[in-house]
Length: 502
Figure 1: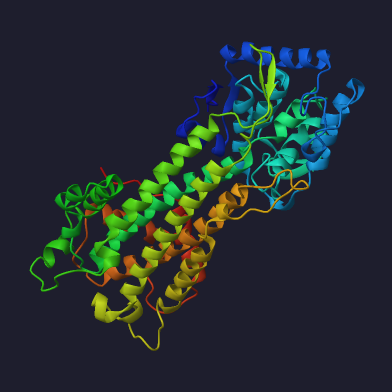
Figure 2: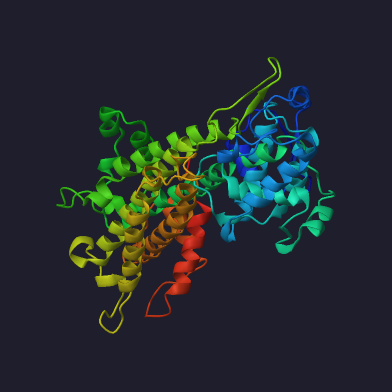
């Protein structure tokens, strides 16, 4: 099997490349066209050091200590100390997918040639990625301003031979990890430690990976929602394109088309064309409106995250053409925090709507099906408590959906007096996605069971294939049994995603 080869041209990362990075198994390198600018920025840093003028982070302290000058003999130690002192993260290690994205995003940012970082440092980041040698990065400790300092320090520590790394999923000391990647410890030059630590790459990686996961959960939620429409003998009239064209919301119209594709050709639909039901509950009828709005939020978040992935967010930035190091605030992750908060709204609403569909299927008055979707109710409880679990997960997401970006706690002796909380904003998305995937998985179990009460009538070819996919993992619930393994299996299928039929 050939390893995919990818060349990074600054500003050219797209969703497909980011998906490949998160998954691993590719080889990455910096485009030759980017190297002159990288070398020029390094030369500019050397010239600034030679001039002995104070330049933040090059020959001064950091944060509140920026007024402290550092002598030339201590510049290398300054950068090493910066990395060591900022390795203050706590919590469990970030996932492999997120750390892979961090390595790629940091290398891509430095490759713009305005950070003053030597090519060999950038190449070393990519060597770790190519060998799938992943720094151990604790998930907590960043407030999303002045850069994702603690997470990026832990990522960078491996380059200087400090800390631990994962090799084939096994945690090993830095020296062993570096050797596996064919590297030796690097002595950082002026500004290099600061450039590695400044930036939004941890929060952005967390948010991008959440958006990647969310795309698959969203597709599964639409598919399972369509299955529930047919299982409840709902109408497909609410998905008529004329309704959605009249409103004009882009996501809504897109999603309505997806429901039509799933339901096309259903014999179940034909069986109740002349029923006396006038309108379905909102959880069925308003799916395009709710899920379409969620899709719009997802697409907007992707727009922001791709800009961030392709930009430069360290400080100061070195402009070789004018020999200036300009201090600013690109490390402030407010755009990422807002994008993550918008994704949180979408994740919560996808789960909330799916839980309502599950609850509707439990109710024989609304669904026309046996209570809790099981024969011999009373002796058997069926899906009663599965719906309770679904409600618990959806309710938890309501609390987690509170915007993280509205919080701020000053740091660094009030020098950094407004922060974004982007790293938490993005990190909590993964807990929310775990919850929503579980909610959709429970609905899938219930909708598949509900379909079977209508046999010998069959749904559309696409929905019957969806039903068969679940049944390959989970048998029909004829009598009460241990429910948790069924939910776990269905949730795993949700996480894999379900492409819309063509």
